[in-house]
Image (cartoon, rainbow, N blue to C red; front, top):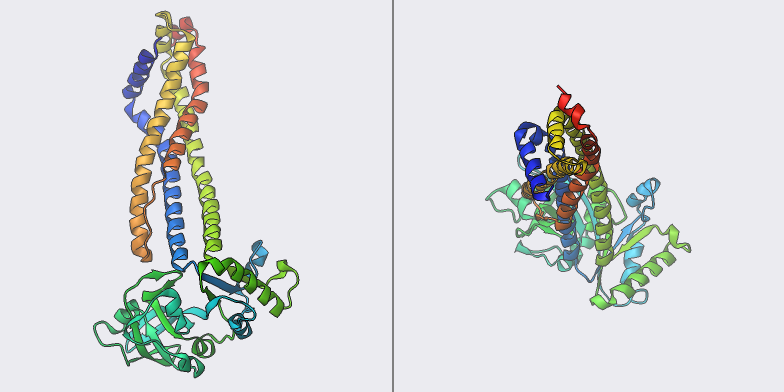
Length: 412
């Protein structure tokens, strides 16, 4: 039988049982939709994080306490207190590291700030005025605190626009005092609405001298990060090596595997982000693919039922000259059409849900979470769905093809 008539017969049979056809492809739709959604959201997250990493600046190198974890047992190493004042001074010394423009210490923690009857949960960033130069952010009202404020552990603060709006509304904030952990801080500057800048959300930030934060707010004497800014991007690889050698010597470390600190450039961070999001996306896609297998089993069961119900039809077609090959092709084609249509619908629904998810996440997280439609994921989804149709359609098709026309015509 010509493929044109086989296709026509298959479509006619599927149209005759619209409800069954719709329910049969539902599993495929869900599976492909889940794959498209997971890949889209995963790539959107990766793109957003990479943008934040790039915003950190190509000349900036981050030094953080704690050994790079190699397994679950090393997770606690991330919360080490191994980077402190002596490391800051050592990295500022040009005899140890050459080509450094500035080294900026950072401590951070979320705390509740209050003014009058209003409260706001903000990111408290303890640093110095050079942080504004590194991130290229500057107050639109007031000024930044100076070196004398850092040395004197002054209780002064520069606040982000969200903090100002939540605590003061339309009132003037400059010169007013807010309380953080019961300690009053005088506001000397207000940042403009900037949003996410590298790993800092400037709008939700309260910036104070790091010495003040260490002693009066966090009760620590170490740093959560040191930001080393190179004089040029070309110097970054060499400076990264010199930082590592300097800290190993300072910490009496001979075995590199025993490093109690992490040195990371923008390129390192981007590679790590891509690797982590890639692994997570692959894991989630494999879980979503289970729905395709379940859908395939459902199609096989439905096709077997269909073969039984259409036994007389098969017998009649064989009596009129249809060969085993014709019957096999028809039922196999029906299975492939079911999964193929399910795959296309799944791609469309998955893309729509991904778009809605991107908008929702952008609003909820107040971050630029972009919509990403993955063409490779769509191609994989449709290819796998058709493959599922072939694999799970072969057995029912063979069962239909091997029926005897005489016995089939006698079937009630």
